[in-house]
Image 1 (cartoon, rainbow, N blue to C red):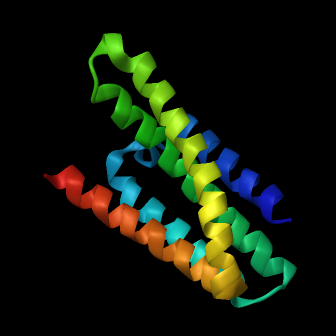
Image 2: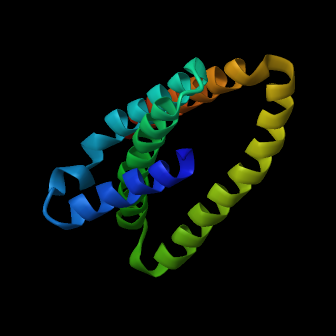
Length: 139
């Protein structure tokens, strides 16, 4: 249920932005997008009801649907035209590397912190990353 609703949220946001809701594609949506992701991760361990899983899946999926296209656009317009393919490949590789290392690292943390603690840690990591990116972007 979580991943089905996650992808409904993700695809729904991308369709909405492609159908005219252009404000979903602006850099100023990054901070709210990260906030949604952090809130969803923090809410996930609060219960086991299907409604909670579907709601959090929609929230996290929608935030992913907001964040990734904007991050790719910022990346593409921040590098010279002849380096854009390299930059996209590097971002995709970093994302995959983060999934592998994150799975191992968060797996070890989950063993120590437990189910509820790992989602709180995930929310803190997302919030810290968002704050850092926001600060860095303003510089």
